Image 1 (cartoon, helix red, strand yellow):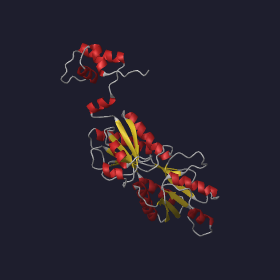
Image 2: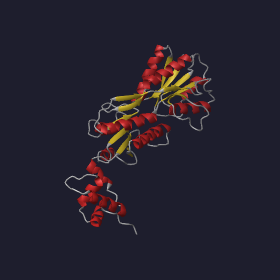
Image 3: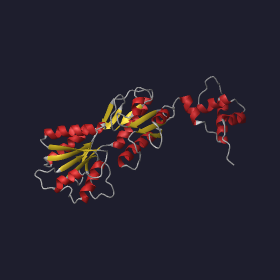
Length: 335
C-alpha cells in the first residue's frame, strides 16, 4: 500500500501547535507568530521524525521564486545528440548547477502549439528563460517587453540581452589564415535565407576581410542548415578549369563535415585538392579521418555565461545588451 504523504497538520498535531506555527518554524520566519526557541526546535524535530517535506510549490509561491530556469529551442527538431546543441545544453546545465537552479526545456514539436509553450513559460514554473531561436520566432515577439527575464544565446535578438561568440573576429581569422596559406580563389558556403544573425555576421565579415586581402570569393548558398554534399562544388573540382577554387569556407562545422564526406566519396583530396574550413570547433565525428580546420567558439561558456546573467536579471540587476566571448583559430588537417 502506498504510504500517505506527511502533511503540515501531522507535524502540528504531534507537537500540539497550530499549522501556522509549524510553517513559521520551518520557513525560518516568525511574522505574526511568536515562537520560543524550544518550541521551534520541537517542531523541527517532529518534522524530521515524521519525514515531512515542505511543499515545493507552496514554498515557491511564498518566496515568489522557483529556482527553475527554462530553455527554449526554436529551431524545430530538438536532439541533444547534435554536437553543437550538446555543448549548449551542457553549458546551461553546468551554469544551473553552479547557481543552484533546475532546468526545464521548452520547444514547439510533438503537437505542442505556440500558445502551449508560451503559457508554460508564463505559468510561474520558471524564474527566467534562455532562448536559442531566430529573431522571427513567434515566441520571441510574445516575450519581448514582457515581465519574464529572458537571455538569448548564439544569435543576438533585438531588445533581449544576448550572449554570443565573436562571429566577426572568427570570420576575419579565417580570411587571414587562408590568405597566409596562399589561397586566392575560394567558395563561401552560407545559408540561403540567412535568417540567423550569426550566419549573417560571419558571411559579411568574411567577405569584407577577403576583399581587403584581394581574395576572390564565390558564394554558394545552402537551402538548409546542413546539406550532405554539394554537387556544384565537386563539379568545379572534377573539371579542368583555370583558377578553380582551392578552399571552401563553411558557415558551421556540420556543413564542413558534410562537404568533407562528400569529397571523400568523389575522390577529392582534402586538403591537397580542396581545403575545407568550418566554424564552431566541435569535436571530430568518430567516422571522420580528418580534423576540420575551424574557428573554436566557446559555446559551453556562452551558455554558462547566459545562465549567470539571467540569474542577475532575475535578481533585478541590469546586464549588458550583448556579451561577446572570444574565439580562436584551430588548425586541423583539412586546410
